[in-house]
Image (cartoon, rainbow, N blue to C red; front, side, top):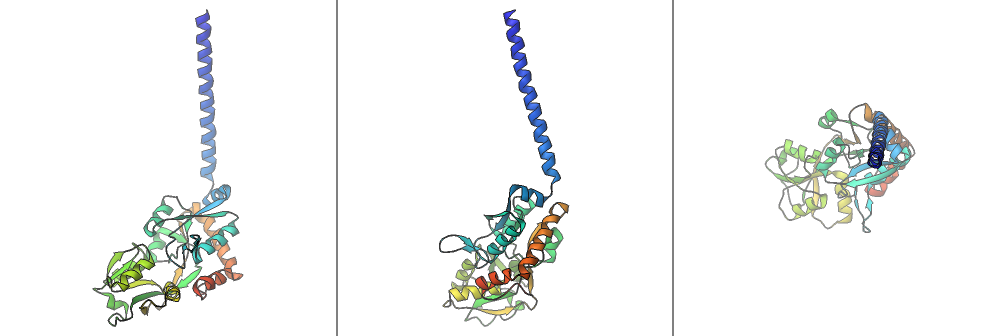
Length: 274
């Protein structure tokens, strides 16, 4: 009889554990179902933070200052957008070619990294309203006289981040593109005469020359039409409300002059106007 009672108690304990596990599983399933029913913006607000991918190596867009703090035009704009959304901006630094892969994998909610709208990108991503307008420039050593147009890039060697618009443009004109990680590295390759030219935003060049006026580099040509800098989002209804909220934030930051002031701080000119 004693052994029977022990068996019953063990069975009751095991049954209780099973019931608790079942209830926990049902609770988690319900919570998962509730979370999956919320769109991206709702999840961001619930979490209280928006995760933003950025390189952190491209001054003055996104870089580290003398105290190693992450700063830059894109960083400040992103923080202001996050404030408008009522959440904290959490930045994750990664290489350029990992930014879009992270957005696709839902590791990042968005990126502010001087991303230009292109037809190819627009096929895969939805974009916010532009918050910056820039021109792509060809940069060479002062002594070079043979590269005066984009057509002159044919057969020349350039350096740019993998899969960037600058690399794609250089290749479209017949240049051989070496992969690099930062603008500073590109300029070093130029001064060492290991490449013939590089393509980058004209405002990035002017900022670099302000800091390093002794560097013997120049702009030899630039695109006539301005590129539109904006924020890419995953396509689909899940991100639609986030895009709308970001567009509203950008519009307000444009209207009250916030983006213009940030631009003047980092570029010495207002790139927020077309």
